[in-house]
Length: 141
Image 1 (cartoon, helix red, strand yellow):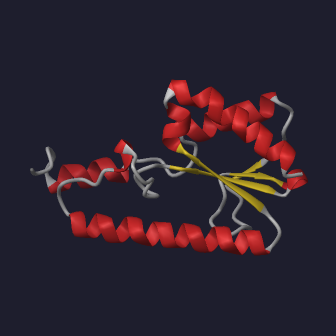
Image 2: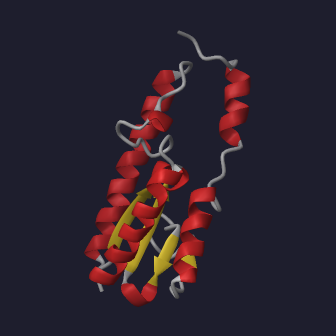
């Protein structure tokens, strides 16, 4: 089955996907702030330019888009029907880069948490994931 969009239209759609300040990131930042946490966002000093850095807790949070970071068994991570070789390579490279960045950060003594976009944007999963995040931060101090 082919993609419902032309190659040019698909390219245009993909180019407009936000890299920073996504809905999921904003929801997580608001949650953290409302619970008294202060953080840095998109800090270029660290590998991978983490979405959220909690220096006081030596905690780094990546909020990964399911498609761009290859969330396994997630409907949102399905590849477009056109140009699949390109997308497979692109997503594989993103996954490898993510793993390398996380490994580097852990070697530097940081606790790293990855939150998937679908865990936050799907309302019936959101509260449980945010409660778990709170636990992870407090327990890893």
